[in-house]
Image (tube, rainbow, N blue to C red; front, side):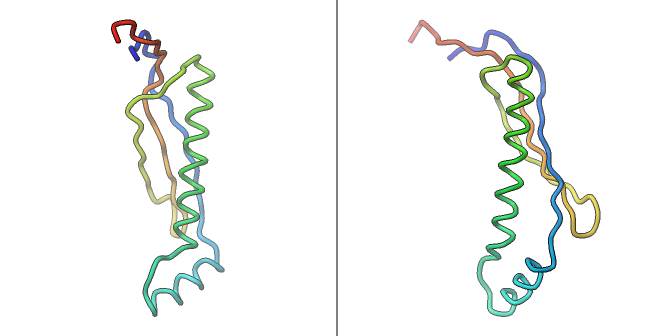
Length: 98
């Protein structure tokens, strides 16, 4: 594939808050150890939402690919965090050179 046009940076983000039921489960899991599955699920849901929003923004620009995708997180307030996905929207085509 070959990049034929750069369309600019695109991004998608979501802000998620923990809830009391997940916190109770996580507190209990901290006592015995192991994966905090409820938080893993929350992170996966947030990542997917951010990616979908970024992809929608790229499609609106006419892109057919996104390069150099990155994720970033930041704390908004106690118990809530933003997950941001960003990358460069481009138009690519087949490279005839093989």
